Length: 130
Image (cartoon, rainbow, N blue to C red):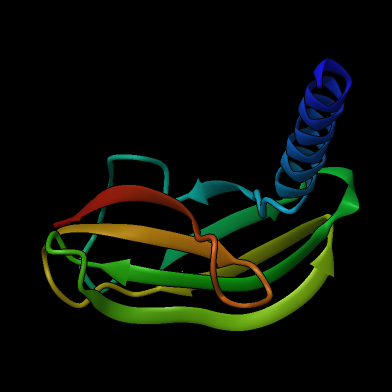
């Protein structure tokens, strides 16, 4: 009886450890660095504003879906700068310019999701238009 109980405990521990390792290795993690505009930047109305976002994954893992938006204070998109399945290993840099046509508070919102468009990784930088 004790042998069976020990064997069952060993089997359960092995199963749990195996599942834990599988889950950890399947987590989609992306480091997102919004280099421009910097947090709390003040930009002029109707003037081009550089936007630069760097998406990075460790171990040269694949970056899947990349989206970059300009959103208002209610997190509603007012401009879509980029939406694509880039499928690039390691690092992806997105650069463009955006010309704000209204004053107020806004954010650059950068999101990356896995191949199934799940497991979102999000980064935001706020800016003011005057």
